[in-house]
Length: 154
Length: 181
Image (cartoon, rainbow over the protein chains, first blue to last red):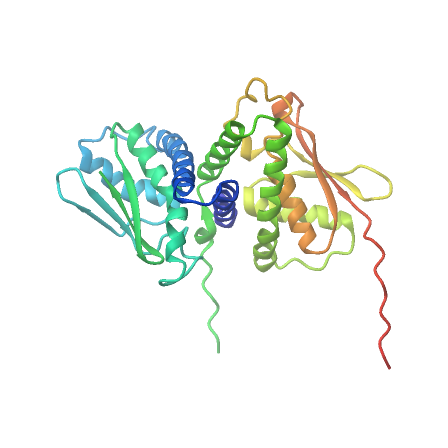
């Protein structure tokens, strides 16, 4: 077991490091988010391999999403996803009302515009996990009020 | 009467694989961005410094350590309390010189390089865990101690153990201010 504080600080430094080495502008902003997302992708792939070593085969997509919401999220963030919604046509929305990477940042609307930088890594994490379970997806995140956030996978 | 705050030890913990894999992804990304090993090492040290300056507050708040009276005590606390708290390992401490300001932390198993088999080709002078050096340096600087931290031995480079050397530097003479009577 490692400590949460260390990971949170490492994650924050990664985000600020990536942004510091990039210049201003919309294109650069997108590039930074992509970099962070790709790092999360690698980590997600590795994590899901270790977690599903001994689990049974998944029946369908919904089963996989339930695994991500319950077991995967619990092992990584020590809590489950609070709400999972789907339209049964391939779009899933995972809602976390107290996302661990945002709790220390603010408890409302402050710093909302910076939230996307800190969610890019986790989007990649989910995308990497799904990819190694056989689902190709695009994961986006939206925040309306910290520390609750929604991850959309489709 | 005040109720004692219920202790939830699990709350502060996170999966170690997540930390190790994230660190690996970070180093991989840095190797892609920078060609020279020294640049990667310097960047990791700088990042570690930023983390250390903040981590020390969390450490002091949670560990209730007493005031230290010697460099040896400080090094022991880093090894036995801080490393244990944050990485779950306890390095052993040795003193390297008679003037008692050079110490080594010796790790049999480095948790951050758990999944690393060997350094990539052409990256032989990469200090994979240089983040740790920066963290120790940043943390000690926040408590007004100037140190030099570097890797003396590295398992990934073929040595038998991983050894981190801490050298406490002499503080510059501070001006003494007389109180106005």
